[in-house]
Length: 169
Ligand code: GNR
Ligand code: NI
Image (cartoon, rainbow, N blue to C red):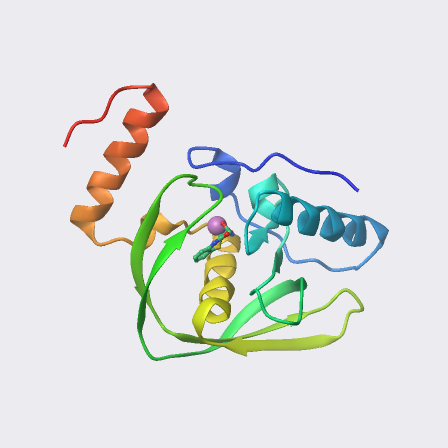
């Protein structure tokens, strides 16, 4: 078991294409265990492999229900519904939360660690995390989901923060 550092906004790895998993071997199984451990340690409710520098289509999540940690390998969104505004954060953009409107319901098809087809579906936090993690695997970050004026301010704040400047309204 190992903890990985989480890559943050500005790290080019978050914008690299991620490759599908073709074989679930011991390396993948160990990586998934490390991702779950890293997610809980953060703490977060989801983690995509590229957030720890691994460009594979793997994500883990824990929607704070009785089901505990779950894995999605090569996930695909197969259904979205409704609309819901929710305050969203990301371990790769630490210390920031933005209200983001997305579909409320999501259904994802993926494979699990045994290579079986699985589907995860729901609204609330689960629906949100499913979309957020698939976004990571598609190189998309929270910032990209903000409306232009809010995005401009967010990017300015993040730049100032990276440069160690004080921020002024
Ligand atoms: O821990 C996390 N919390 C969270 C809250 C609202 C919407 C999405 C998330 S996912 C985030 C962990 C993370 O960055 N996963 O990629
Ligand atoms: Ni995230």
